[in-house]
Amino acid sequence: MTRHFLRDDDLSPAEQSAVLDLAATLTTGATPLAGRAVAVVFEKPSLRTRVSFEVGIAQLGGHPVVIDAQNTHFGRGESIEDAARVLSRYVDAIVIRTFSDQRLAALAAAATVPVVNALTDGYHPCQLLADLLTIRERLGGAAGRTLAYVGDAANNMSHSYLLAGATAGMHVRVAGPQGYDPEPAVVARAAEIAAWTGGSVDTLRDPYEAVDGAHVVATDTWTSMGQEEDGRDRSTPFHPYQLNGKLLGAAATGAIVLHCLPAHRGEEITDEVLDGPQSAVLDQAENRLHAQKALLAWLL
Image (cartoon, rainbow, N blue to C red; front, side, top):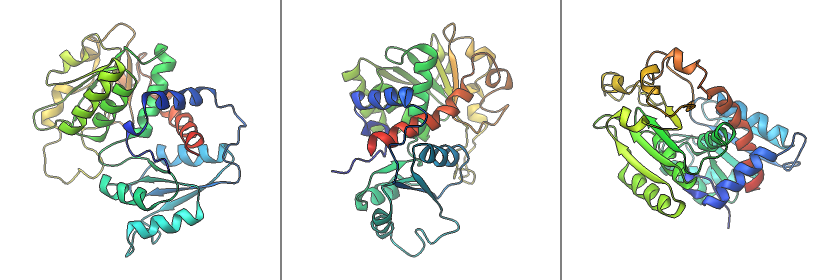
């Protein structure tokens, strides 16, 4: 059976740990993808995802085939299932950054090679592998640590923090304003996983309650890609959730700050925090490369 990585809980706790172990030990010069090709499809614009996957595949000895859906016939007048079947004849894996999770699921159902979610509206699981790798490096491990995510709790990063954090045995707290809550099914699934791993999940309103004593404090832009014209106020409700020095002061001593980037400085996060001594965002960005290399090597 072909293994896909469509959302964070597609990896069991043991499998997640194995991928992160591999990310930390995969040596420079290792070429487990030698002679293999990986399609990297972009239906949403990208910087970090495109560069990290393209460079990572090449470093593993593979051939990245980057497909910009805006400039190709991918998905134009052709079903996503047919595109998946054709690509499966050419490449050994398909990485896609797209919009709906239903589109991703349709692609994976028709593909006969592994499909990797490089970001959808619902989840950002490759980012969370990088985040967990960063937490391991900075704090010595993730299990038992408390992670607070503040901001738009209804977005893909919130969902992935809940699922991946619970899988890693973390105590995950997400806080956002009324009307911007995570999907109840995601919260329920994360709680189910946490019951196995010794972690926990909480959804809160008060950002200070969420951050209190946390070892990791994370945020994301208040307007995710594709939400620019949704007609909702994506500024006023989020002001109390800005990750600034005062809010960070409620966290545990030595807490680290995560942001998946790009950041809107002065909105969801201030310069003093993003550029401050507790910020791990550049390590976090670099770890996209290492975590994704490990994921592809593990899947293939």
